[in-house]
Image 1 (tube, one colour):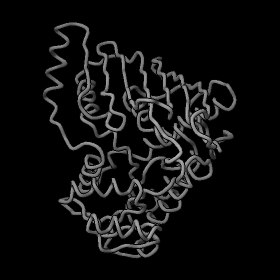
Image 2 (cartoon, helix red, strand yellow; image 1 turned 180 degrees about the vertical axis):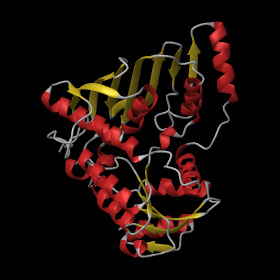
Image 3 (cartoon, helix red, strand yellow; image 1 turned 60 degrees about the vertical axis):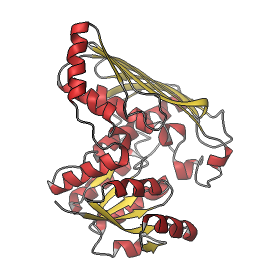
Length: 352
């Protein structure tokens, strides 16, 4: 069992990563941190006991003792840093949104093939015990055919949040509420109910004076014939995340915590008392595990130890960007957009 050495780049959300790494310290050691802000570098380094601190990535890439580069920077820096890490022979972890276009995914996947390194997108919400129990029920055949999903992301963001210079701008954030806030909840849709066939969407900016959307409504048809609705606002008076899935054998509802919706408790409701007993038996048999960032990081260590793909793959992140590409095209044109989006499509190179 290897203990991997990590460098964390970007100490905004990266500070939350450091907390996650600390919970799996038997498998990872954070040996370096990187941030352009010297004061933040000192404060975070002191808090987490990381002595090696840098204001640029280059000296970290030159270190032979570092196995993994954890990229938690603003989105516009993701692709160049991912490519630099892979070319330096490092594995990479990167926050969402991973890349700005389907074309960028194809470029990075070619680089992964040539370097033999691993790239894991951060989708830490997948590592919640609610999702774990639902997957167990699906594996046991107790969910059945998917019918309908409704996914609600009702959060609050105001002037203080958008005072950070890169937020709310297309060039640096690539999009708004859909890409920065709701992407985790929307990731669950295909993961649980299968491939998306078509999208119809509307977006608007009503809450904040920004370039990007802060409200959206989307209707999705899945290849199975199931339907889903996705609603997003950053103007909620009460913050809620709500995922509800209806299958032929089961209705499933997440908790309402905005930033822990994948965690317990979830409700699993069967159609009969007999079916409910079977559901309860499977749910109770699922051993709770580490959730959030620590859960994803631990699963990554196990994958690296066994030479397996990461627990969240580049293909998973590509699906999330394909959905966003379709949403933004539909909102712009008023048309229903069908997936998959081919390489020749005008927005294959990005919706901007």
